[in-house]
Image (cartoon, rainbow over all chains, first blue to last red; front, side, top):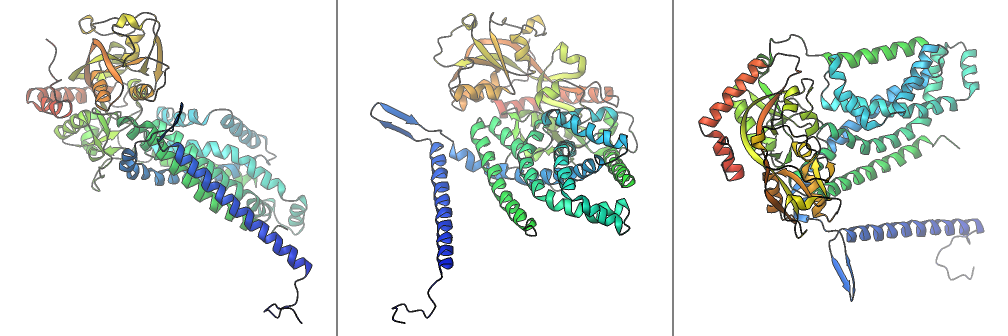
Length: 282
Length: 298
């Protein structure tokens, strides 16, 4: 009663105090992380500032970039961002379909289907992505299929990521307990219904967050598609203006910044998605 | 479930094949007829080289263009080769579109009908002529050796034991390896003995490596126009001695095209000859190179 405190609240319990302490520690930690990030960013910017420091006999030079070139060409390079995102989105869509089919196929009891899926995964995982992109660009025309550069790239990326992602989907499918299938069969569902109504929906919850991660990886791997010269995405634009105007380094670093920012943005959404998908889990 | 899997995979495969094959309804009788009927010609040129051809980063793609989406319009490109190609398109009576595959894909032939003609300062050589049908040359320049300034090298012979950079699949690479197959009258100097070759993607990587301070090689072989552009851009390089050979640069058409190319090549020859005689080529050369490089050597 004699406490000078202005509030009427009961004294805090020990549990509350411990909780507050934890919250404060958490906040201190994230502020510390943010400050460290800013310091590291500043250091990175300093590395590319082009300044020369000399302290007596010791002299130190940072990397010089032509600011005027970057300013002039940013709009042109930036137009590749949407192409890069577009290719990655189309490819991840194809990859998801293929990965699901390949994962389902590996559950098949029919030898040719099982073999087809393992053969596909083995062939694609056993060869470089760069080579696969050129394969679809150069080989398909011989059998009369002439794809625009964009589609050749999307098919190569989609097939490649589909093979890797089939492992994610397989893990997702096998994460659904055997009891679920048995229960579905017990109430009279056909195997097809069990798959489409019971197993796949639960498996997808497990598989979607890693797919987001694959999408982020693909944003950068899509740069390989520029090698054919028919897809005018971020990397292609950067290398061409860089070469023609003798500023490769500046152009590539500009592209690097765009890739990084894209990754930051999509990582943020990926984290949100992951948190949302795991809400049901305890 | 098995049935569903089989069905879905079949549908996906059929869909992919159908989208790929769509639009190849009727075949015109030859390449010239095809170009005329669709209203555009697809020209390949490597936009890594100013002033030959580079991207016009300020250019806006016209909304009325007929060019396929993975090609560029004349508004989005610039340079001597680009202007020559645009003029060729104009005289053919069709729009000019630019495909931009990498240089080694152009010289290798077997273009799979992805583009119709190369107007990309390509040197006529016997090896390339096996895969490609060349037109009359539309201009000429010289291959030269460029070296880092103050390197203590004054003649080609001094290069013995050193490394030189070249772009892959160029005549510069052939010259360095002693595999250049040009008429004897066009070759002025033999490659120095005992030189290590460093092949990079394009000549520009060679020049920029030297500028950035790398020491993998002491110089590079390229066209005099490229060296002049490098020096003008402040690169620490100089031209070593005189030219090593003359390059006759022509347009080229893929011999393995699925349609007959003869009438197209002869039409290109007629156009290029006319562009020589009416001064169009000289004009363009003056604009982009400030000298007339279109006169045939005597």
